[in-house]
Image (cartoon, rainbow, N blue to C red; front, side, top):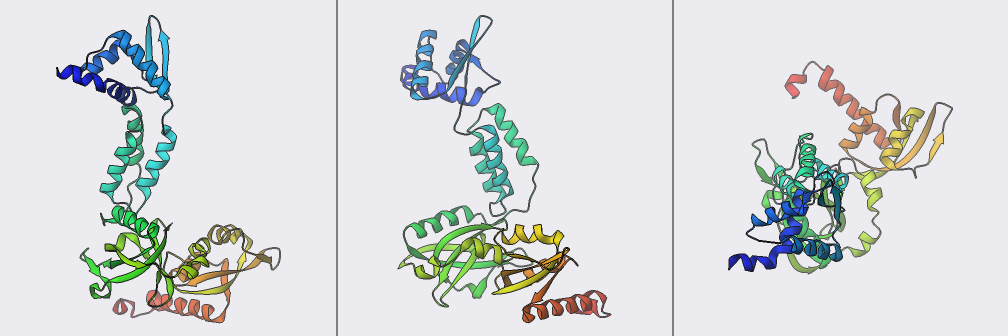
Amino acid sequence: MAKREHQKLKLLYLIKILSEETDDRHALTVQELIDRLKDYEISAERKAIYRDLEELKIFGYDIISEQISRNVYYHLGCRSFELPELKLLVDSVQSAKFITEKKSSVLIRKLESFVSKYDAKYLQRQVIISGRVKSINENIYYNVDRLHEAISSDRQIRFRYFQWNIKKEMQFRRNGAWYTASPWCLMWDDENYYMVAYDSSVKKIKHYRVDKMLNISITGDTREGQMDFQQFDIPRYARSVFGMFGGEITRVTFEASNSMAGILIDRFGKDISISPIDEHSFSVHVDVAVSQQFIGWVIALGKDIRITAPESVVEKMREEARRLSDQYLGTNCKKEI
C-alpha cells in the first residue's frame, strides 16, 4: 500500500535524481532511473518512465537524451544557475567578512543543491582556497532581514551597539543605552555591511556596522530624515569616507606624480578633475572625510603624493608625521606605548 501512495511522488523523485546525479558529464539509463526510484520505495515500468520524462520536458525541464551503443542516457541540462555563476556566488559568500563561518557554510551547502553532487565538489574546492577573518556575530543574517523589513514598512528601529574588548567579549557602547534611528538603506563597503540611517537626535545621517548591532526591534514610529536622505549621495559618501570612519567632509587638494593618477581614480572615481602642473605631475580636488584612516592612507602612498590644501588638513599631516617620529625615533617610545 505504501508503494502505491509513493507513486504520486514519482515525478518529484525523478527530477530529484536527475538534479543530484546527472550533469553534462554524468547520465543515467532508464533502467538506472528505475533502480534509483526503488531506493525511495517507488516501482516503475520503462514505458511509464519514458512518459514521465516527456512530461518533465513539457513542464520546462531541460532533459537531454543521448544514445551510446544500444543504451539511451538521460541527464539534466540547463539549470537555474550555471557552475561558473555558482562559483562566483560561493566566492562572494566565503569572502564576505560580515557573514560568519557557520552561516557561510550553511549558505554554500544550499548553493550546492543547485548542481549535481559531482559539480558540488568543485564548489567545495572553491571554499577551501579562502581562509579569511570572519564576523563572530551570528545575528547578522537576521539583522539584515529585520533592517530590510523596517525600511520597507517605513519604521524606525531600536538597537544596542557594541565593540569587542581585549577578552573577545561584547562591550556595549554608551554603557548599554539603546540607540534609535531611521534606517534608509544598507551599504556594503570595505568588506562590511553598514546601515545608513538618520539620527533625529542630532539631525544627521550616520552609518553603523550591521554585525555590531544587537537586539534590533522595529518601533511603531514612522521614519524621519526623508528630505536629508533624498539629498544624500551614497556613492560619493562611500568614496569620501575611509574605512567607514567618520570625519568632517572637507575639500582636499592633492599634488601628485602622474603615476598616482590610477590610485586616485580607483578611490574617487573618474569624475574627479585632474589639472596638470607640468609633464610629470598634476593636482586634483576631492571631498573626503578627514579621519585618522584617511591620513594613514595618504602616508601609505609615499613620497609621490602630498596634500597642499586646506592648511588645517596639512597641519594634521604634520602632526601625524611628528607623532610617528616621536613614536619610532624618540628615546621614550617604550614608555609611551
